[in-house]
Length: 281
Image (tube, rainbow, N blue to C red):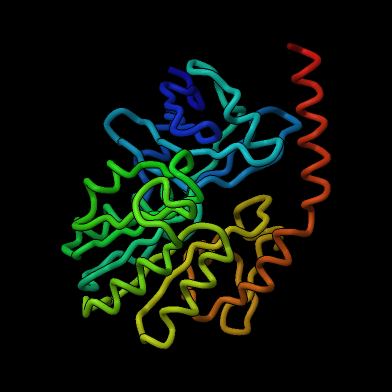
């Protein structure tokens, strides 16, 4: 089988799809928290996607992609048996997996896919793992049963109350803390504003909190500087020094501003792509 080939797929929600890709070299070396960079075609954008799972025996890796912009939509238009142009990885620094005690894994939206391998590794290391999953509604809530297999407890929230408890992940985290549960570490992945609010929440509790950052990224090797983030008042490169950082030291306002820099251009590209699809069909 050729590398980059999609061996299996699963539609997890109307806009979220799982791709299983034959990439034996990556599957043999991947660790929790690392990512790959993919392209759909020669002129395509290089997009970083966190590894959801991997299997050295079958030589496959699994990624979960949400159709947000033009490139991610093109990824999800690929069919089983099709191929990505290229897949580079594993990239980034793996999450430090050790015995913390009780570790809380907070995933928002597609960030649930990214927190899954971390929860799995933490539990295998002997931690008690409590996972908090959040989404706007039940249609966007993914991998609830899968998270149950790698967690001692799973708490689910949706903004509209269509699944689990109505509210935000911070509400579930607050109740967990108020219950007297000793929290030794929190790992949060999701929308930037969600990670910021969780970091603000846990700071006065004195609980170690780590966030996986998602700045604009190009080469993924530290050469371009496009992924720079501010952590502890210093510039850091998320692609090689992260993507996981001490959430209490991250300048989330700076991160939000940088990720929004090309939003108008992204909308224009997506509108053009939809027009082309309509013309084809």
